[in-house]
Length: 333
Ligand code: UDP
Ligand code: MG
Image 1 (cartoon, rainbow, N blue to C red):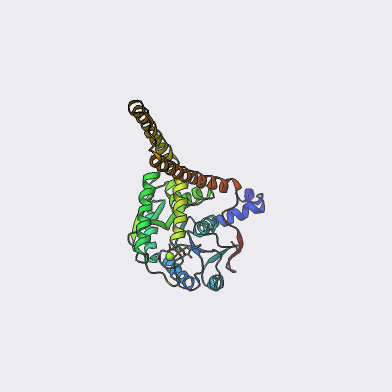
Image 2: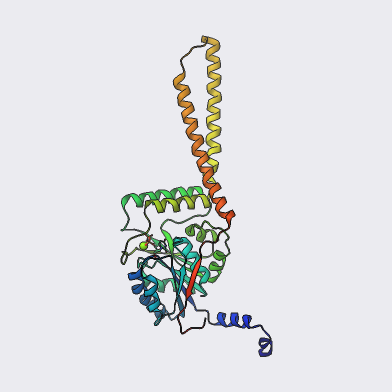
């Protein structure tokens, strides 16, 4: 065994070494302008993981913050195993999570928001369920107090639409607050698509999963980065990357309109044969031209949405660019 090792190239030995030292758990924290929250959450998180008696690393993915998030996180490296992944600009939460998952080395990965909205004490329960053999443990938020009535209801409508339109069930309220076993992380890392709707992808990969209900806490400081426009864009990504229904609907509507038009034509022919021709009918004409024009433009728009996404995929640009990785000085990993 020893002699066999001696013949291995240095890189392999390093890989072996890294593997041996892989922590039990990697925590991925996407952070965009969270300077105050990051200082609070990291010590609390470390405390929870020590309580669970697991070795861990904390990966802060700095998603192009313009405040002092990086400086504050760097300071914490003296006391905690914090790895900072600085993305070259703001790539959005989904891509920040993707970056974190690819960087994580742990046998399990826990994803949580950096803004203290995800209750940390639940991590004990997550880890327990993981020990029981669940490959994915996900939080299901049953109420959100920090969103307006309008946002809450549009998100409810979105999930209802999505569950009708897709074949993978995407539970409402289930978000990014999750524990993923290494197997799940590898599966997610191997998905090649650029347009990342994480909530859909978690369901798509499958695995033995267990929900844990939770109440969303108030944000530490700062305010949510997702307004109606942001959520709407995410919703369009969600629908178009998980369903072809919007494309298919137009086949049905087109067929219906054409059949009605044929019936109407027959009716006109019959009427002309019996009563002779008459001039009136401009109203019917105008209405039908406008209506069909609208339907056509709308369906072209939907085609465009999919073609835009095909274009994104074909360009093959990376989902994110890492500007630098800051590791704590004391470790060699
Ligand atoms: N976030 C990010 N990049 C972004 C927007 C948000 O990494 O472009 C992070 C943010 O720092 C936080 C998490 O994603 O840790 C959730 O964001 P936020 O609190 O703004 O959203 P909400 O809680 O309203 O869903
Ligand atoms: Mg938040």
